[in-house]
Length: 396
Length: 83
Image 1 (spheres, each protein chain N blue to C red):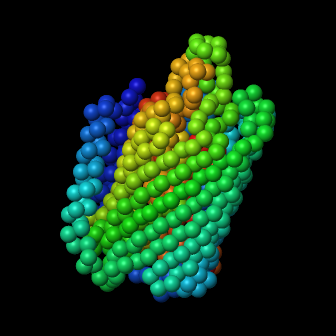
Image 2: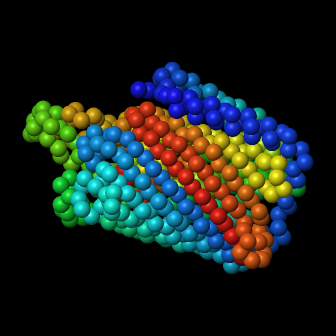
Image 3: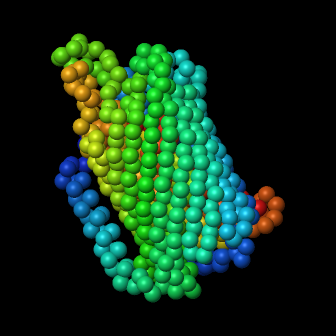
């Protein structure tokens, strides 16, 4: 509690400090006009994320064990603007996971001395014609017990002198799950498919405001349980009190979400980004998310922005979620996965971004952007997480 | 321990919705008249509709640790072992 109060005070102080420096920055030069060669050539981005979490409700041990986990993820993104019409991009990353809880499943996954890896790669092509853009993408990811192929289509069109943009995307995932049970024994494999559809309209609402309304729908079918997640049974039919069994979840899930994103520039030195999202699915999970970032232009020769990050998340529990010793084998579905429980979470953080524009030259002169974000996330069930990200981009 | 009471949560949801809707309505009064040469403020980096690449990491972590996905301009629901 003391730490949280100190964090809030620090955040408030950061806000005041940044606002003061921004208001004093009368001599800051205006944002550089667009480079005439903007959008041409090859972009290379190196991204890196360190993620650290802890909690005491791991579903791997029936909702009562350690959730201690660290992930280090380097990613490289390449984008080639071949012509005015065609662009290609590729994204390659590896999640290096060290986990205390999954170490309790079997010997193939991580421990303090061993790593679990997830590799993921995507390839995308986009074509622009007049006011329309169409694109497709292919992707693949592989973890020790999981492989996934994905493909997607996207379309967008500008209207009203580019003040209105309508976008739609369809993405399909075909996944295979290797069924390691709660004792770490491989019991074969099963399939899972996910189809996501997204429709959005982006509207310029004034000289300083732009908003996006996004509708999202997802349908999942197949094996949706995690086979090594345990549930500790209560006294009842067909099971002993305290007996540990694998979670049982339905083999379909329909998910819907609505998001409203709004960006407003109070001046050329202060920009407010905000979004509000509502979510609902047929497992009984509903949630609300509010995100705010206030970007302050720093009084420097380069285009440099600093911003505090705030996010509030509130979720109601699934119909199938329960604490240990709540369910019996007579129940058709049950899980102790806290992701499906009731909780609220708060995220605080700071970010810093430098935009240098597209310039031709050597490695240093070709530097296009630099960004870092540090966020602390905590839930009211004792779960805490820290995320540190860096991104560096070059244009050649 | 709860961070906020149900009344507090409800207040946050309602007030934030009201603020966003108000800004949307007030801003929309001049939404059709922005010409290309008047868009220099809209071209500022933080005004970009899409989030930054670094933010995608956080979206990804949230998809793993929370029960909801989608409509966040980021990660969707497939391709990972999370539920």
